[in-house]
Amino acid sequence: MTMKILVTDDVSPKGVELLKSQGFEVDVTPNLSEEEFIKVIPPYDAFIMRSLTKVTAAGMDAGKKLKALGRAGAGVDHIDIKAATERGIVVCNTPDSNTMAATEHTCAMLLATTRHIPQAHNSLMSGEWNRKKYTGVQLQNKTLGIIGVGRIGSRVAKRMQAFEMRTIGYDPYISKERARQLGVELVDLDTLLKESDFITLHTPLTQETRGMIGPNEFAKMKEGVRVVNVARGPVLDVEALAENIKSGHVADAAVDVFPNEPVTLDNNPFLGLDRIIITPHMGANTEEAQLAVSIDAAQGVIDALNGQPVATA
Ligand code: MLT
Image (cartoon, rainbow, N blue to C red; front, side, top):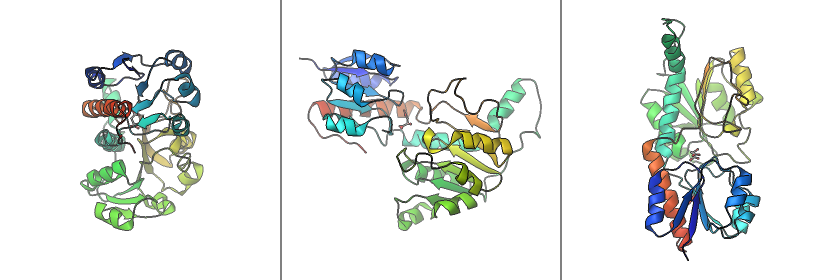
C-alpha cells in the first residue's frame, strides 16, 4: 500500500517532488493548529514541518501510523523528542542545511542595527533627510561576544573578524584549542557580558539556555551594548531587553526570534521602540537554505520509512 506523507509548513516544493518521485502520496496542508493536526494526521505514515508546527505527545498519539517526522530545519525544541522516541517515531532534522543562511542573517542584522538602516530608510521614505539622527558606530576594534560557538556562532566569528572585530566566545562545549583555531577567545559568561560591545546569541533552546539572558545578565553588560538574537526566542528575556532599550543601557538590538511565534500586534514586546530591528524568524530563509532543508528533510523521511539509517543531530 502507498505510504502517505503530510507536509504541515511552507517548505520548498522540491522536497515534495522528491517524495512523490519515490512513490509516496503527499498532501501539503500548512498552518494547522494542534487541533486540526490531530484531526488530519491519522492516515499518515510521516510528516514534514518547520518551526510553526508544535509536535506534542497528543499529536503523535493521534498519528497511530506515524513512523517518521522530517524537520526542515535545525532546531527540535518544538518537538517532544522523548514522546517521539517512546512511540518509535524517527525524528530527522537538517542540522547543517541552513547554517549559512542563519549566519548571514546574523551579520546582516548586526550591521543593520549598528547603522540604523531600516530606521533611516523609513525616515527617508517619509520625506525626512536626517543624517545626524542615524549616526552609528564602527565595528573595527570593537568586541563581539558570541554565546554559543557552534556551527553558526563560529561562522559569524569568521565573518565579523573580517571587520576587524575582536571575537570572544562563551561555550561550555568547545575546547580552548578549537576556539583558538577559530580566532575566538574563550571566556566565561560574566566576562563576555562585561567586555562585549556587541553580543550575539547562537545557542539551541534547551533547559540550560531557556531564559539564559535575563535582567541579571543585562545588568552586567556594558553601557551602550548592542544585542542580536537570531537563535531562539526564549533564550533571551524580551521584557528585560525592552526595558534595557528604553533605559538606554542597550543602545540597539536586533531580534529575529520570539518566545511566542508568530508575533502579531497583540504579542509584540517591542512595539513603539525605535532602537530595535525585528524580523519574522527568517534566519533560515534563503532560497538555497529552503531548498536544502526541504530536500534533506524529505530524504531523511524516505530513509526512515525505508528502514535506512538517518542523519540527525
Ligand atoms: C532552524 O531551527 O533551523 C531555524 O530556526 C529555521 C526554522 O525554524 O525553520
